[in-house]
Length: 72
Image (cartoon, rainbow, N blue to C red; front, top):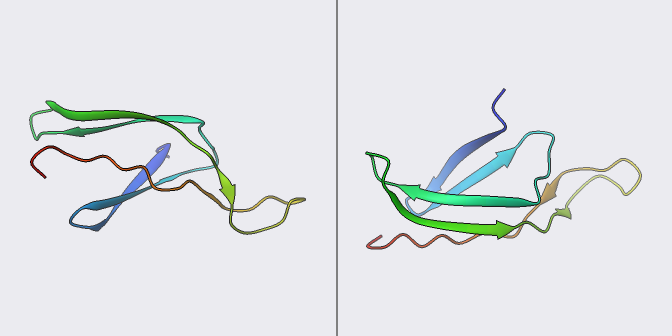
């Protein structure tokens, strides 16, 4: 199983979901079709529980991370 999966929400927005982990840091990159990095951004993630309970845990979310692609 992949550590995450990506879903395109609309022409300008992607949503990433991680499986059974809550990484504290990510590096987001936008690449061309040939693999050239257009922009790269590092971000510390601040997870907030959005369901379940303090005793049992539950789903968590991170506020959106914006990556503005030049010319996009």
